[in-house]
Length: 190
Image (tube, rainbow, N blue to C red):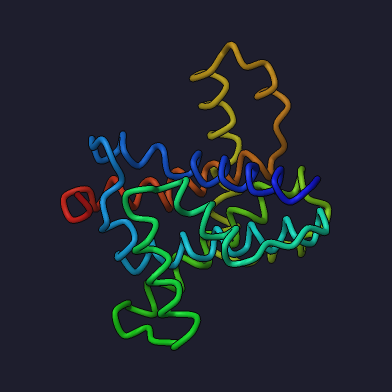
């Protein structure tokens, strides 16, 4: 895989993650509050950072800051610059005063767990999951239910019957702890 293919892969993954937000919030575009909410910002920053890092290890392709900027701006052209400003503020100055650290950490942990479970079948180099982690326990407890839900919702996609427990668990986690959070906080985030 070359650098341009990797940028396209990462952009597609980020777009797929962000697209349902519009439907949940019943908006035509992603609102800025998605990026300024502590929990969601922690999730999104970790998601893209860990995804880039895992892809770099797997495919031996490095991305620079401009590549990262392209991914973000393509995924959310309305707010990408604000996300990049927040990221710069956090990584360069270490200033997290705007965010609630405990909430950011919760978002980070969900993102790491989601990626670890969801990318197991794709990337060969991922750390083992801690089976005692609360997010892992939750995800695995809902995996079979999520797999059945996906199969029933999308009966024409025959591949769903063979998805792994890890992938089903990752989907249960993202639907409950990311999209569920957005749905539960709809009034604030709109």
